[in-house]
Structure formats: structure tokens, C-alpha cells
Amino acid sequence: MALGSVVHVFNVQLSHVDRGVYESLELRVARHPSETEEFLCARVLAYGLEVRAGLAFSKGLAEADQPALEVLDLTGTLLAWIEVGAPDAARLHRASKAAPRVAVYTHHDAGRYWASLAGARIHNAESLELYGLDRALVRSLVARLERRMAFDLSVTDGVLYLTLGAELLTGTVTAHRLAGQGGRA
Image 1: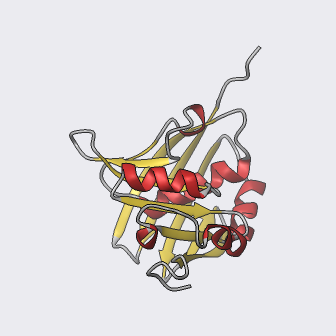
Image 2: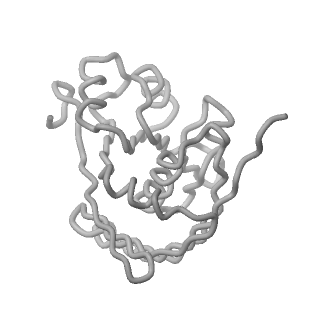
Image 3: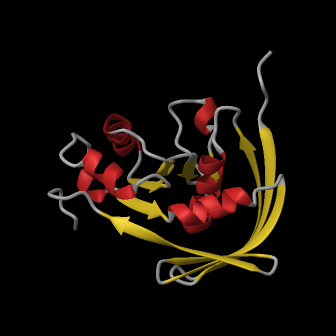
């Protein structure tokens, strides 16, 4: 018998000062049976960092050719392909051909992951947006993960402040460009 998805509900008060985005979010996120808690928490943080019109969780792990998050316009045209984790170069190559904007939020060893992509054949590699989520912050959120959660997420100067009740968790998100491909190392 196949295991079903577990639905988590996140009520998030978002203050993304860096982008001027202030919203109350109620996110119903299905956790696929093969999805780790770290991946789920990274998806939720990436959603908070990417909030904009048309942003949605895709079918993701249930459909291999889908990103973790996607931005569609009103006609259904894919505007942004947003990955979470450590997608390989071939996947990013396909994503860059499918969408004008591709972003990756990794909750793994960002330096090692970025090095694995250096020199790889990726369409429009110089325009890839690569972000490293603070691994300690993701682990701290996982340690507190419940089926229903409410927290405040503030982002200022690349620092994430996550308030759960009286507890404050902090971590950074670091931006990266592939070396030798038009961006900074």
C-alpha cells in the first residue's frame, strides 16, 4: 500500500524588507512520502523569499519534470522555475530553456553544490540565481516542525529572522553566481 502525502499548514507573517514585501500567508504544503523534513522546510523558506504574484508550489516530487516552486502569469506561461535542494546541471539546463528565470535554494553544503555546477553545460548559466540557505536555520526549523505552525519571517540585508512564539531563529541566505560564467564566484 502506497503512503500518502502529509499536509502541513504554515501561517506566516512575512516582512521581506529587502524586497518591500509584507504579507500574511497561509500555506498548505503537501509533504510527499519521499520528501525529507529538511526539503519541506527549505521549500517553505524559499516560498517566503520568493513571494510574488503567480507563485505556487508545483506538484514537485510527484512529477519529476516540475520545479519545487513555479511562477505563472495569468495565461499559465511559466515565468520562473524555482528549485530547492541540489538539482543537477542537466535539470538546470532544461529549466533554463523552459523559463526565463531560474533560481535554486540549496539547504545542502552550498559551496560543494556550487562547485559541482562550475563548468557544466547549462543554458543561460550566467543568469542562474543560486542561493544558499543557512543549514543551521533549516535544522532548527525541522526540530520544531509540526503539522500546524505559525511564525513570523523577516528578511533584512540577507538575514532571515524566524520568530516562533518567544523563540528567535536566525540565519543567512547567500547569493552566488557560477564562476567563469558571467557572475561573481
